[in-house]
Image 1 (spheres, rainbow, N blue to C red):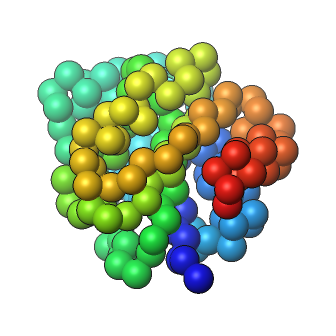
Image 2: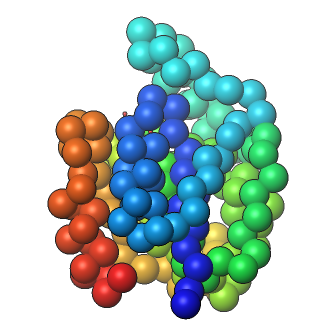
Length: 161
Ligand SMILES: Cc1cc2nc3c(=O)[nH]c(=O)nc-3n(C[C@H](O)[C@H](O)[C@H](O)COP(=O)(O)O)c2cc1C
């Protein structure tokens, strides 16, 4: 039987909810991508986070990941993140810099507030050219928060999972 892993990065918690739903429906292990320097998850400070994230993007930074993640032994790896400035947070680049996804199957998902996946699923294909990247699932933040059980179930069905 193939082994499944859900890896996710989330600051406000909505991507985490989707990650938990996927893990629940697939029996996958669940691992958070934890930043070495935590981001401010207080939504009242959104503007400061937005500025900080833009600086990370403009300066092509690679924010460090605190936890050691093991992807060995997993066949299918779901990778989830929020949309930040029309792409994924720079820590996802760190993930692809540090881990070798060759021969793995990657299944991306993300939360957003209108940008859908922002072309990030294609970016993943470029960052992990020897991986097989399956059809991803973009989910609006409000849908993630109000329950994405059906959306995840439909997606799983379309992937023959
Ligand atoms: C710094 C920052 C930048 C964002 N940029 C975008 C964006 O370009 N497009 C979009 O649709 N949503 C954008 N959002 C909204 C987030 O994608 C959305 O709130 C997401 O669900 C948050 O995920 P989380 O709860 O897992 O942290 C942005 C949010 C933040 C904090």
